Length: 125
Image 1 (cartoon, rainbow, N blue to C red):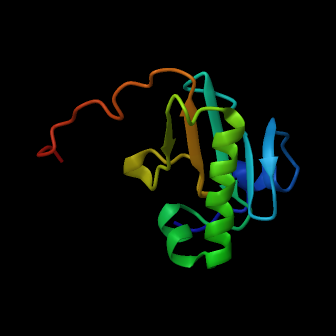
Image 2 (spheres, rainbow, N blue to C red):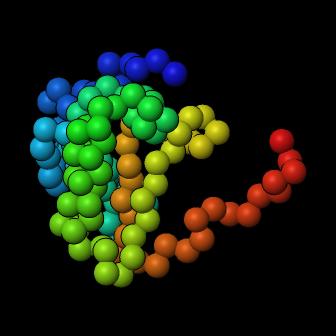
């Protein structure tokens, strides 16, 4: 997957599209999802151009990785979902349902979330 600078998260980072910002620093931007799947649904994106989790984990500098994940932890604290439990999801690629080609983490909470996935037949292809 090639990074597409016209993707919605790149446009949010450039200020072309507004967002309901939660927190931001040199390494990340966090904002509320516009189509939430839970009472609390935030997105955390790195400020640098990474297409997906594998790209980020392979190519980001150590300070980018640490800064980003410290930002994720900060957002979890700000949202107040740690004590009751939350889900942190990152879809990577088409089979996982990644919709935006910019690495991002979903933070979901505020209710009992249920099973992570519906059961699938692992032998089916």
